[in-house]
Image (cartoon, rainbow, N blue to C red):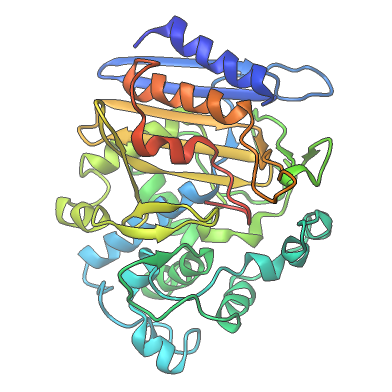
Length: 386
C-alpha cells in the first residue's frame, strides 16, 4: 500500500472534474486515509477524509443483515412468501409467489418506484424538476411501495436473473418492523450499527446531515449545469433502501465485521454471498447476493461490498473475501455522464480516474486488472441509487 500512489490517484479524480473525493484504504493492520479537492465549490472549503456522507444503497447491506438476524432467530423464513408476513401490503397472488429471498436478491419482478416518485426522470432527457419539487417532501414507505406494485412488472417472481429495484428493500423494511415490533431505524441502530461499533453512522432525523460533511452536487447527465447542491434533502424517498449517513472508516469497519461473521452467523453470510446476475439501474449486470455485490479483481482476489448514490453523493465500499484488504471511497458529484449525439453516454476522464483509484486501492498496482471493479467506477445509475 503506497500512500503516495493513493494520494496521486485521489488527486487524479479531483483533476478530472470531481469537486471532492476522500477514501480510507486498509491492508492488514495498515490504514491510509486521504482526501483531495473541496467540500464546497463556492467557499473552497477543503474536503476531509473523516467527513460524513450519504451512502445511498450501501444501506441495503445493513437492511439485509438485519433480516438475516431475524432468519437466525426463526422469525423470518427466507423462502416463505412475503404474503405470509405482510398480506395487506403485498396481497393476492403476488404475495403468495414472492418470497423474502426474492426481495433480497431482486428476483421479485417488482419494479423500481423511483421513476414514479420523480416523474421528470422519465422525460427524455431527464429533467431536474422532480428533484427540486421533492426536496422537502415527506414520503411514507407504503406510498412508495404502492407506486412500485402498481407499475408494470419486470418479470415473473423467482427468475434466474434479477432486475434491481429499490421497492424490494422498502418492503423488507416493513417486514423487519412487523417481526421485531419496533421501527426499522431503531432495530438496525441497536443490532447492526451499535453491534459493529460504528461511531459516525446513523439514519437522518431531518433533511440536514449532522457533523462535518461535503456539499453534494448532482449533474443529472448534464441536465443540471452547473451541478446543483442537494446536500439538504428529505431522505424519506429512499428509507431502508438508501438513507444512511456514514464515513469511510465506519463502512470499512462494518464490512470487515460482516465478512468475519460478527454481524450475522457464517451460514447467514453464506446465503448473502450466493449471487445471481442482476441488471442494475444503469443497464449493466452485477453479481448480487442478499444485499451484497461480488466484485472479482484478477490478481487481487474477490471483493464483497456495495455501492450507492443519493442526489450528489456517490460511495463505494469493497472488502476482500479474507477481510485484509479494504477500500471505501466517497465523491460529491454524481451522474456526470452526458449523452453524445447518438444518445450513448460519454465516458469522460472522471471514469478513467476513478478506475485508476479503485485499482490502486484494491490491488496496490496501477497496472493491475480491476476486472469487475470497472463496473463500479461510476457509482451513479440513471435513476437514483445503486
